[in-house]
Length: 187
Image 1 (cartoon, one colour):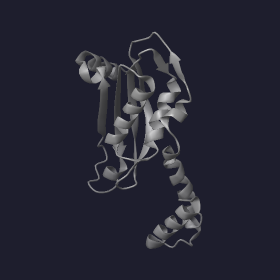
Image 2: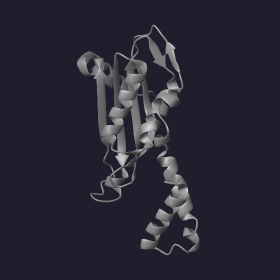
Image 3: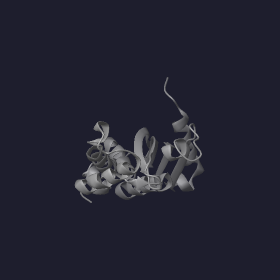
Image 4: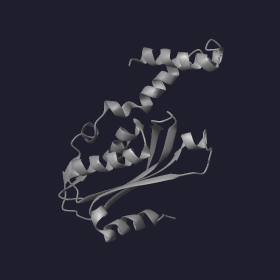
């Protein structure tokens, strides 16, 4: 769908609830279309493209943890945002991935119409496939505006999801190490 088609769709939606010709709304269809394209630009990217070869040989086999990666996504059921943070860990097996590439992988999948459960699994699977790690763990904590602004209207609700692959699924000590590292907060 082109930007112009999106603009027309937003104009139609606005016309159902307000006067689209009033000054504050005149450029809203154009702005909304551009915002929607940005918020869903993950469809235009693949994990392989954003990693761009940033996989490096390494003898490290100890856990690598990247926590508090902010994420913004759109609920596929209501087209409302959910906002949170993602924690990722992996156990390297001969190579490591560039640090910023983990955040970029999160964005590839977050910038699509999503449910949090699938987002969590997609991130874990992509990192596993790219790194051949001995294990990958992903936890997402997010607030969903579809639950906060409408429906049940619970302002303080937080959803947590996890995906555990390889050693994180099969070895309770590895899983517990990851979870304990997440609970460590710097002062």
